Length: 237
Image 1 (cartoon, rainbow, N blue to C red):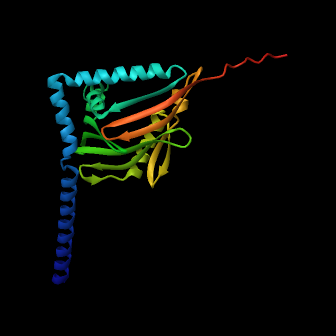
Image 2 (cartoon, rainbow, N blue to C red; image 1 turned 120 degrees about the horizontal axis):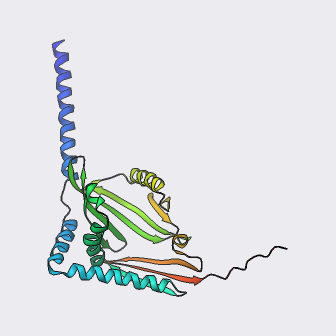
């Protein structure tokens, strides 16, 4: 009897030790530093001191205003947005416009743009942990002209997160908030599809998206605006 209890105690001890070691390494992975993200945060802090960040933000807003003006008429439109411009806007205007992000424990959102992939990263308070959460997005134009955002990977620190579970949570949030979009899959990854033409068109003009190119440090987008044919009112007889 004593030997049996001893074996149970030994087995339980080994299981608890194994669980503690697993939790320790999971915690280490989740709170591991992300050098590329930290470098972006430090970069924008330095630009705040020099005033360069405000210049970058204004350039982005002027560029988008010009794009909106071009797309308002029947013509082809295009623009290239840089990583530097986006991070300048995220570090200043986003924080100003959406103070509730900090209230929800989300800080310092940044983007890292490499060929084919846009990584959105932020620091977040998660169950008492301060960790960097990152999402790898691969944007493209779907065959039907929709704006497609493929969630290629997600992680907290260096620990991977299940993309299918994230898709379910985002889908529920979109339904609650009435946000546009539907989910599909590509290469086994969840893909958010947004009907660009439906969202961007007006009564007089139809706007379509036909190109998205994610290059090193920048994103190129292009599309076309066409004037709709005038509608003739039906006369009842």
